[in-house]
Length: 219
Image 1 (cartoon, rainbow, N blue to C red):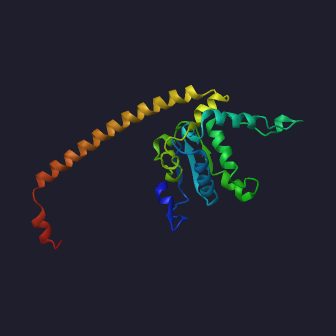
Image 2 (cartoon, rainbow, N blue to C red):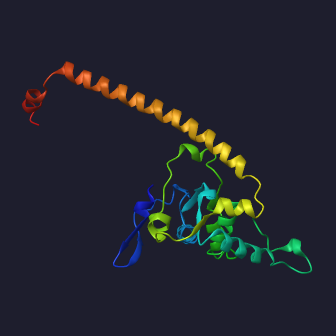
Image 3 (cartoon, helix red, strand yellow):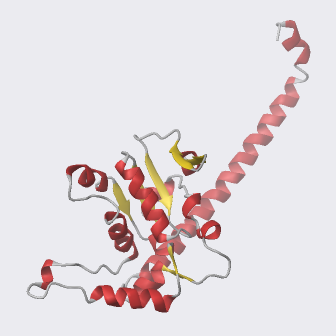
């Protein structure tokens, strides 16, 4: 299911086209703007779509790193005076930052909102079984299409690493292994496809010209 078929605009109004709610839409978060991606995901969740966002560490935020870290430091000051363990909770991992951003756009304290929010998952990297599934992008949230040239931005994974996330190196090593494995699979698949195409061409050559036979049968 392609996100290109999910989000089309007509006369300035966003309409949803060809959405199959039984399928899970897997979005590759790398290169998407955090707020724009979260708003589109929240809307789809409320309409009944299951959404999984992978590679959350590659999501970007508009504005420089210093500005983003100052905002997060201010957010960390928010606490319950008498019982800080009651919240608010300050998540440091990229997937939980995205999770909380989407939660703020969903009425998660109502039954409808809670049911919608249960349809959402986010991960760092691309864990199984999503590494063998087709992944989509959201054009309305891509940085290269929505952020002006030359504007400052920072990567969510780098911000998380600065504010206490301890698994950036682990995710990078696991992603390198996954990409190497995927490259081997793609090379083997291209070789198999080339062999199949050559065998098909050879078989067609042995059959000769079938145009007279096709014409004789009325086609």
